[in-house]
Length: 299
Image 1 (spheres, rainbow, N blue to C red):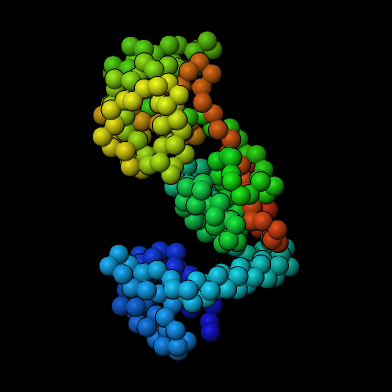
Image 2: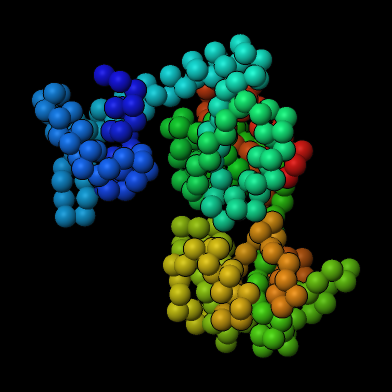
């Protein structure tokens, strides 16, 4: 039994599809299918049930995957301890962040980190805060930037910064008739009730922006039209900038453009807290701690 074989099985379970798992593992689908067939034959049990929608673990498969995760986690912990003996001259960190926020935060963070620690590799894993929290609980991440509050990790977080949720639109959008200048002169704000007749572009319910946006509608007792309701946050913001509709975005992801306007929601705005989160009760490598310190410095 090799570690890479365990990683294959875990990836198959996570993806629920041989083709998606193969893409993630940079393998040919036929090679991964043949591996799984032979591996199950050697074990003498079926680890997965094949369905029209993909694959799902059997009872034996769930047992195997749970233990495989534990073995892989302990291997990474031992590797981290060995890397620490090299005094930050080598090592690796598995770092989680949302795709949307990562696009704007990760490049400058990694640039600064690699300049100081050129031999430490940082592997990026993308996912929303709920998915990242689950991966931290499983021990498959060393560090992540997440939006608070979390549901399972409470003591393993450290405040990083506040981030404001904004509306993004085109300067010629009719919503600007309802925009008010801020008291400090730094931009505009709008009452969400005044946007009830305008079309929205929304990300899905399991995203922070999608969830909070819908909460604001409910609180204001409005039901604005929305024809694209499962768009990624990045695509929604891009469509909002063109004036197709109103979209939610983060101040940390706001791209300045002469035709783009970002509006606070109410005079005081809607804010959330971003935090650095770590796995529960596991050894944290010096490389992971160094990346966390760099994140606080740069971001």
